[in-house]
Image (tube, rainbow, N blue to C red; front, side, top):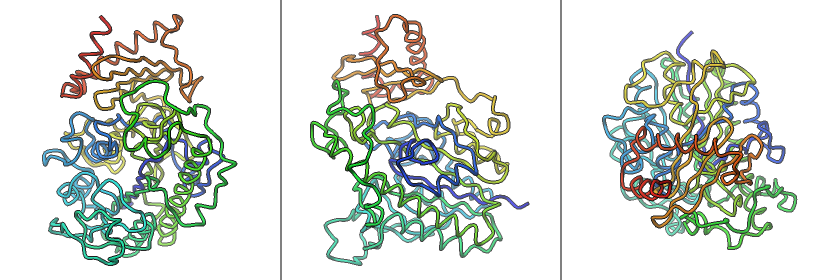
Length: 466
């Protein structure tokens, strides 16, 4: 059999619990549900956190390099030449490497990653109906000013690094259509890698009217951990994402945000279905590895928060589904994994050598043998404010604000998945607390958390523990 094709759907701000077939009866995602039923879902998939408010930038930098958070340059704003990239590695292995949609890690790293593409958005966010995009340029010299397709939208777009503005088509459909066009024009001579990087469901939460009307705001369930305000100052209560809703949060406003969030995800699901149908109709699906993942989660009213600049489950826990040839079907795995594990996993699945710069762990051994352990712990960080660690059951989060340790949280994720009961002061869990605190210290040395952010956190934190 020829080398399998690879299609990687990557979404923006999509939380782990926003797929119908993964225990969310409120949301309509039939195409993602089918991928779940035909593949393997890693239910404990996470990002390492973020070193800046635009969490998606380091998250995507980690995905494409397999590097850990504090070994990225400038939060992943650009990728050093010595760091191998996923698309670049697949190109070298003989793949036609296609990239469409959001790219948040610098023009040069995009050019290194792909030998074809379309509708490329260099940036963090934009109006979904007026996407400032680039055509693929084989020279890698993308323009700094756009051709104005619709002058009436000049105040709604990001003018940097684009050569056209596609007005009137939603970003989700724009990128899906570009992918479909790419697939339909493949000759079959070389295997292909299609990286489909959606801007949704990131705000502004707009979508076609049919999907907006799909969810009745009055019937949306308010999560158990809803709160009008966060219970203490976590260092990021007035950041950009937190200003998307009024203070204090109200249930009616949160219901509206959730309904719009779900509507964008259902629209994404429909677009993914169109791409999957194209693969099916062209007889390519049986020899195509499908990956689906998100770059980070989002609070949307949980814990009194709206954004992703925190270490709660709703913000660091992401969806990850893998399907295709030689992938177990209809299975769920509980191994603790990171986004950085995707790069080495793809290398192993297609039997090419992993670049030596990768720090992630391949999931291929675990796919073959479910008892094969990947990690005992996951570590997390957000700026110089928060550090966390979890094992299969418990999770610790420590907070430092204005040079002072302000809070410790300990949660039992098996019995309290919404993180509502802080066990840190319960003597019954003192052994768990001490064990996780000892494990947390390993973050500083193992992951080189000794830069400015790390120094600010660890100085205050360690003085408190003395």
